[in-house]
Length: 368
Ligand code: FES
Ligand SMILES: [Fe+2]
Image (cartoon, rainbow, N blue to C red; front, side, top):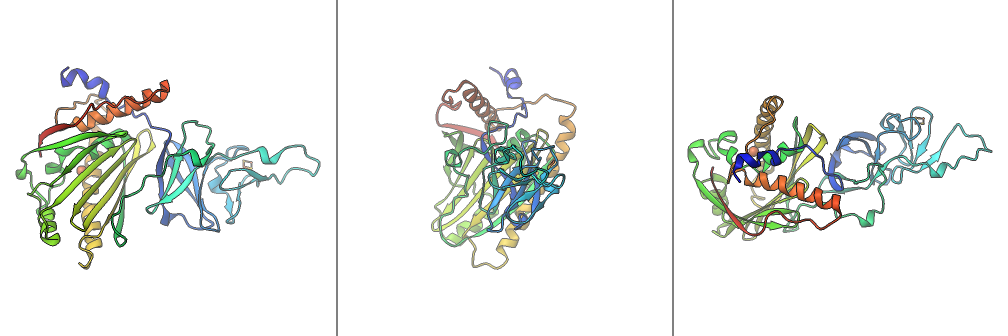
């Protein structure tokens, strides 16, 4: 099959994937006894933190007459709707009080629930599990998969977070993330690389559960940061591994002797046409070097800004031309993403085990 003939099947459908954990907000923005609005997969949420410091997530709509609960009050124990004063337990969503009821009322208040979601904090973010059933009941939290976690390899490390909103569907955010060919054109910098440094690369990939891995390899020798790292870590044994895992997770690890750098990037669907990229990185490299965290934040911000600006431009084109072309081998990871997503959704629909679309290890070649 030619690339062009398969384009149709690979066109992003902007379908959002329910049944996963997503990052809703940075933990630092959720303060005790305060309510914050957030949105995941077109579900309006109100996120808060009780007086013990535990975060919670409710559907931002009162079960009475749909007033957003985020307009209400929160004393650290119960969320009170601003319209008729119904009160709810923030974690279970269970109704605690309906002020208009008389003492002889037969209404079973405790059977009324606001929509609520499983909610956990990890690596500086409030994560919310968005279930398959759109009803908004959290279900049994012990049945849920674990919250994704940034791998770290020593006790002491530094960490940064960066985020940017993109005006596109989650699909374009993700394939932008895994696209190796835009680097020399979008991310030019004198200390990193120029478009003239383009050269042929081959990288081995392998299937992993719900995703694929760029197998451990020695990073390309032509970039300044890797040269610096080789010098600093005083080792030639530098390896890097990059994983992509459904629905939206990119994990990268660089190991150099006892030194390491680890990052987790997620692209989170806010609505069908809007997503947010969150980048979290931790490292123990250059820890003795002053200002390293600030420098890395600066560089990371610049990279993300470049991607963001590129996508803002791309969206103008996507509005008018639904046709995409994905070419081998540079766009193969993007093809795999669409195939993985389709296989996953099909398996869910049919209630069978997912058939992994990547049969085994494969080497991709491209110039970048
Ligand atoms: S709409 Fe919330 S109490 Fe009536
Ligand atoms: Fe990029």
